[in-house]
Image 1 (cartoon, rainbow, N blue to C red):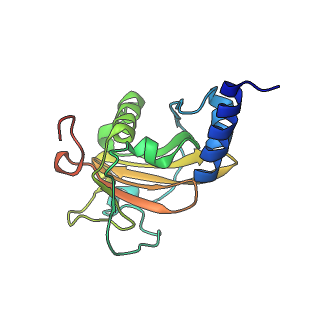
Image 2 (image 1 turned 30 degrees about the vertical axis):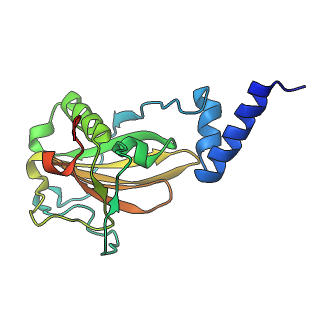
Length: 181
């Protein structure tokens, strides 16, 4: 016979699974609902784009949908937005200023912890994003063998979520929620 606490956990997992398809899987693997594991960030060198150093835009081949941004009124981090299904980020190519992998990993972790004011399905900035110095090309891996693209230049980020949707974020100071804002 199940206790009230056990029954409550079953209901919470069921509810979470109906809201996010990976919630039940993650709650089992993480130990309990709400526990978030940090994704692994690994260097897996390979040439994704032979014209990497000349690139000026993120996610060139990805389709965009213009319109209104998705407001982040809940002040979620990028990692929270991508969800519990995010398992790993593999880094394949980096710019000249990111030769030390520890610097790349630190930069990616900082981007994952940023709280953007909005998420868009298009690059919502006018400035170019030259890859030569601060660019990173990689792959994101999610549960159930799903993968996507991650590209970043400085504070500009383009990433595919676990459903295959591509999102763009500008993570400059004015574009993120601060501690007191």
